[in-house]
Image (cartoon, rainbow, N blue to C red):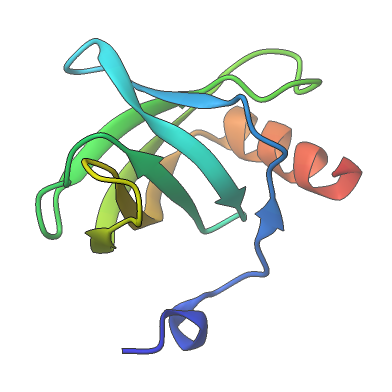
Length: 109
C-alpha cells in the first residue's frame, strides 16, 4: 500500500519536541512527526492496535493551547530504532474550534 496515495491533505513536517498524549490511557502516545488537517504520523514506543481508535491531545506550539482529536490507526511498522514504531493515523473526530486552531497552525507552519 502506498500511504502517500491515501492522504487527503498535504502534511507539514514538525520540528520535533511535540508529544501526543493519550487522554483515555492518561499517558504519552508518541512523538509527532508530521501533521495535516486529516491525519498525522507518530513515532512511539509501542505498536498501536490495527485500526484502533484513540483520543489524543496535541500541544501545538503557538496554537493558543492544545487540540484534541479522535484518531484511527491506518498503518504501522517497526522503526529502525529497536522498540520504536512508525504509525499513520486518520483524524476521525475534531471539534469545530479545535479544527480552526489546527487550520491556523498549519497555515503558519
